[in-house]
Length: 333
Ligand code: GYE
Image (cartoon, rainbow, N blue to C red; front, side):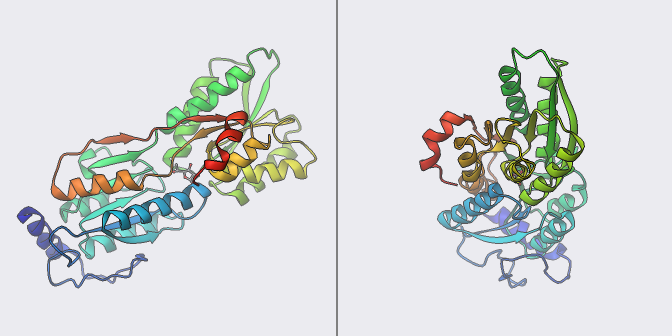
């Protein structure tokens, strides 16, 4: 406890006198008591910087974090970065200035975090990465990284394709809708998939572009793909939302999604699972957004100064159309 209080006092001394910005959580820390959240001894305040609200996955993730914080008795200062790194950096600086007990964030892109993470470290505020990784060489800048193995997800997508086309001898033309440029899931889902399909030269990625993880962009880019490539066999979309947007584009072009063009996506949110059950998507690799409970457990431990694992990987599965029909009614998100 003493350690924590002195850390907070030190954080208070080093905090810069700039106006708080980017925090949707409404401030609430006086800045003069050195007592963090100002509650009882065990009260924890977490500053959480979310990527945005770009997808069904993200909405479910935000809900999970907010509900789990309430359940764990953790005061949450939540900030939505609208998919912009600069907003996340501002939010983190604001959390440092408010002397929260712990900072958690889902970094929109992998690079460019060292400076702000160093600031948090200097202020002795522990940081937990959730969902997405950073590429900082200095891993002492954060306590733990909780989230999925995106390379593995990309591999699972590729493995389904290899199996689905095992008897095919002709070229299989693939188009890819990538997630947000520079983000860990976009980089890794691309890489894992490419590794697996590279084993068979019949698989050809004929176009690959970002759809920024959104439905609107997924539709727009798929429309462009369809215009310039008359012979698309497969769409690999890095998330359900882009796949759902692309389905609209495919139908708009007079083709049948799931038949004329086979579709693989990642996430398994309800709308995606519905499209899978309806036969419009062929296969979904699950990525769980329900990270809240594990995040709160990690937060409590790091605030107490306990040792936590450097990496916590989420458990996930995959879904075929048949499996989607079975689980759809009980899907939480
Ligand atoms: O797959 C996508 C979201 O980082 C795992 O971000 C997350 C990804 C998720 O926008 O739908």
